[in-house]
Each structure stands twice: as structure tokens, then as C-alpha cells.
Image (tube, rainbow, N blue to C red; front, side, top):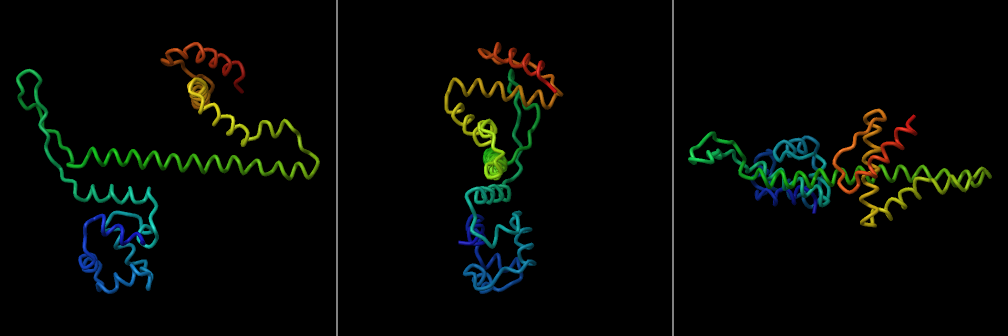
Length: 216
């Protein structure tokens, strides 16, 4: 199923209605759906305008993340602005009318999921790049310039070690504190700040001292 078919169904529209908005025949739509003909660039742009979605969504099979984006676009298209009265706590009188959308909560929830998926994909891409760097070790071995310590501290081994630590409930919390402070140190020019770390306050303070001592 190409994206166009899924999108039209998700928006609860008929192919005749879509054809009318595009200025083409219903048969043309069927030709696109059955992939007998490619969707022209001009029509892709029209579809993108109608459904508020990227042009590439219409001529390929959609993945789960893209389908979620379609649902968000649909909810936005049918969401209406409403006034929600804000009441005074004591006497119950209306203080102000707050403007909200009928599907505001659902849209925010789904957009948060989309953002999380986007961050996860970027993270996977970055991890893959880091691991690709380690492929140079093979060339070093062939050239006789391989240093065992170089492998022990390779990106691949470091990532493997971090995964093992994150799977350990106690150690995972400690690692998160240290990584948070290291990242903050990088952002603040070597001057991380101790926030409320609860039982990990001492670890946080010790980590900050080490970062200050060994900062470049």
C-alpha cells in the first residue's frame, strides 16, 4: 500500500473527492494507487498542500513513525478552537475563557511520541557513525600498527560497556549522573553545577571535583 491510499483512508476521504480537489479523474487516482503511473511532481505538491504532509509520503509505503505523523496531521485538520472557562476557586465565577483545541491533548501526546522517535533515530545514526570509526582498526592491524589498548578504548567497546551498565539498575543511575555532569561541564565551559541528586549527591560532588581537576 502506497502512502496515498493510507492517507486518504486515515483522513476518511473518498478518492473522488481527492480527484476533484486535484483536478484529475478518479481513474488517474486508481492508476497511482495501483502504481501503473507515477504521481507527477505537480500533483505531489498539491497533495502535500491538501494534507499538510511531506511530498514523499504519497508515493511510498509508510513506516510506523510516518503513519503516526499522518494521524497527527488528520487530528489537526479536524480540531476546532473552543473556549474553556477558567473558574474562580472560591465563588466559581468565570475569570477568563481559555482558548483550546478539541484534540489538543491527543495531538500533544502523539507529537511527543514523534519527537522521541526522531531523537532515537538520530541517536542510532550517531552510534553507527561512532562504530564506523572503529573499522579503521582493521587497517591498523594489517599495517602492523595495532595497539591493544586502542581496541580496549574503541567506540564499539565503550558503547557495549555503557549498554551493560544501563541494564544494571543501580549502576545505570550512577552513570546517568556522571554523564549529565560531563555534558553540563562541556556546555558550561568546565563549570558544572550540583543540582538535587538525592542519594547521588556525594557522587555528583566527587564527579565535579574530578572534572574541574582534569578539565582542558
